[in-house]
Amino acid sequence: MTVAKAKNPWLYPAVFTGSLMPLAVLSIRAATGTLGAEPVAIALNRLGLLALVFLILSLACTPLKIVFGWIWPIGLRKTLGLFAFFHACLHFLTYAVIDQGLKLGTILEDILKRKFIFVGFSALVLLVPLAITSTSTMVKRLGAARWRRLHRLAYVAASLGVIHFLLRVKKDLSEPAVYGIILAALFAVRVGSALSKRGVSARSTAPSR
Image (tube, rainbow, N blue to C red; front, side, top):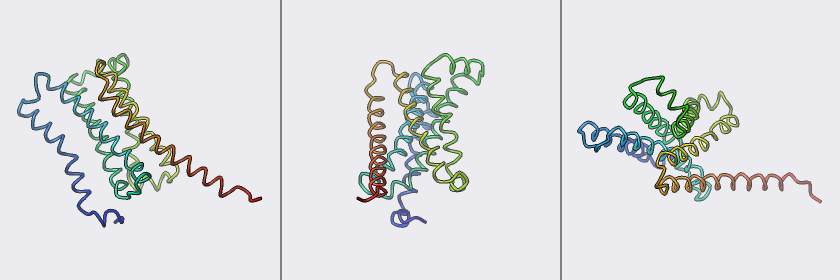
């Protein structure tokens, strides 16, 4: 057990339970017919937004450690990332099964011809190897350096998710723009930290005069 888990044994069950609540509410509303006049469209929008939110939350864990020195968010990173993948899969399955009735030809045509669907599907595809390699066993098999390089794709997937959102809403771009700004800020923290470490390393290895 990590130090963070030992100090906050309640945190992880609370986050896991809380992460399931939006889906539970959505499922209850769908079952009771209270999702509105376009239930499939509303379900698609909510699931897609949840996927993006969880992905950005997972990406926020390391910047929180860098900026504030908090250790506990790191232990939540994998859980939040897997919830992002889970909701992204549900988002796509709702589209493929409920909206399109598993008509593979139509689905493929949509992916190839409709830009926002192509971008969203690309984001989902990028999340697949990240979910598969999320276990400790895969970290050891790939090696820490290769694993870290692979998981930088999470920023690419999140960027595609924001673009998918922007293309989907078309008119009111304020909400997807907020997520884009948050993502850019998180990325800036990571880049700034990497450059700072590189500068320190360069100074420490520079020959003394």
